[in-house]
Amino acid sequence: MKTLQSGLTNKILIVGPCSAESKEQLRQIASGLSKFNLNYFRAGIWKPRTMPSSFEGVGSIGLTWLKDIKKEYSLKVCCEVANPNHVEQCLNAGIDALWIGARTTTNPFSVQDIADSLKGEQMPIFVKNPLNPDLKLWIGAIERLQKAGIESVFAVHRGFSLTDNGIYRQTPLWQIPIELKRIFPEIKIISDSSHIAGKREFVASLSQTAMNLGLDGLMLEVHNQPDLAKTDSQQQLSLQEFENLMNNLNITNTDENYLPETIEVLRNKIDNIDKKIIELLGERMVVSNQIAQVKKRLNLSVLQVNRWSKLLSDRMVYSNKKQLSENFTKELFELIHKESVRIQDEIIKKE
Ligand code: PEP
Ligand code: MN
Image (cartoon, rainbow, N blue to C red; front, side, top):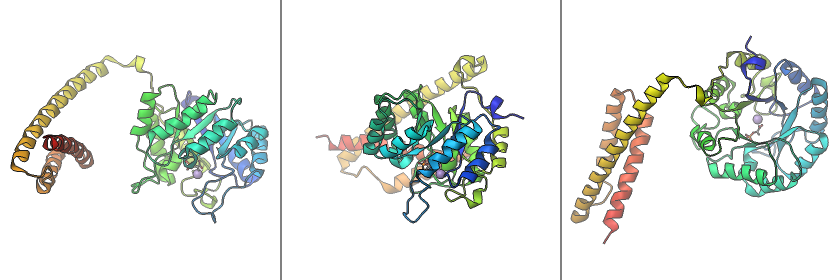
């Protein structure tokens, strides 16, 4: 059996229920998880809810339960904090690590208050991405904690709240954690596939995508009776589903020093193709420039809606024949068109 002990070496694993509901519930989950080599057992004590009538967590009593779980099952425990008072209570209770939720990361004042309350302390802090797809806000929160002297700051990717999240509860926008990794390769990023998914059936495949992208670990919600959970019942995995996920997860190798020669050859090909794409885009913008001169002379508007509609649908039909997805082609040409409009607008404005 490919368990965590072997399969997820070098990956960080944070698992547990969305919320602590009772000591018995925590015991059952911790006992079911004890054969896995977890880095942290998670459970929310103070729950940020949209509506005040929803279950807002058990509060401070949950800290004493987590303290007992820590002792009984030799697990490190973590929970969410949203203000300095939470931090103080967690420090007093001997909680091993903390996470900052998405709603809190969205507010720099709150993050700064938390960072100030952690001055002089050393414990791992996991920073979820903000609700909105704003990489700078996420980086800002991480930096506030680093500036307060915290040495172990981790990022948690939990997806972004857009008006249309497709099949998921949150939209992954994988390019954002990828960009974070590019800018700060030393910051470890954990994938919270549960909150991206919103439904348990999507958790395994999202976790695999996170591993394929070389992210550094997983934060997963697991419950002894998911359907009866007081929060996030649709996305929490049963203990059996978690075990299946662990057995089937393929951990990819992220070490760039062990790339075979065949990849080098293929990468050279890609480099040459990209060069041609850039040259063609350059040529295309020169033509846009010439069109702008004509439009200026004839006092024509930059945007000709019918032409743009026809261009886009023609490109989509053609790209379909080349096995390119419609979405990709649409986004690509919207970007090219935006740049073309920008160039033409500049020229027409010039005296
Ligand atoms: C949670 O982890 O249970 C939680 C509330 O997460 P988020 O802040 O990502 O919504
Ligand atoms: Mn949750």
